[in-house]
Image (cartoon, rainbow, N blue to C red; front, side, top):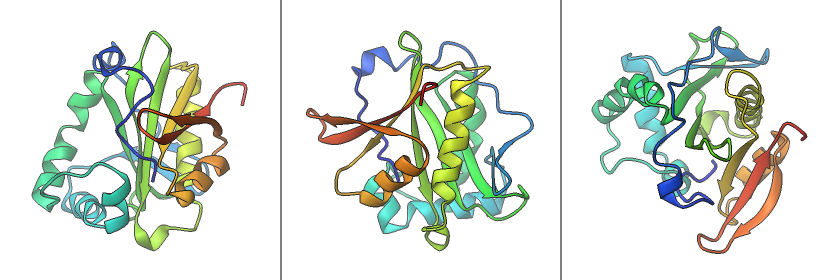
Length: 196
């Protein structure tokens, strides 16, 4: 679970978003094992998201709402189109090869910096799916897509707390390279770039 929040650039440089709408990948991104699809406005997706928000590990390492309920999750899911349309975030549910399968996790891009052509990736995996490579595969698939057309990012960044070695291992397996520790926030910064 890469830590969402703290970014290596001042917030004033990244609050505006990508500057144009973020189109959802069509067809959904997949690698033969995992599929990344938009969150659906269904009870099952909202329940999966609320369940993740209530997991102590996810709550510890990622940002979760103060009231992690199914109703709040449904409202968050309903805002995904507006977040993508405004260029602020692209949030995707991770499933198995069949996108109708239950949600295994989430991966997303946010904190876009158009001047530097970078964005931050965040992810989490449902407890039942941890240790199976779900997050690494999903993060790698999304990063590869973001570095190519249509976004053409120069890099995808990830931030990880040094006390979260499982996420560091996930980022390594997803092809990210450690850049070092951000002293202001005491988190490790990782990079995926076209040159590897």
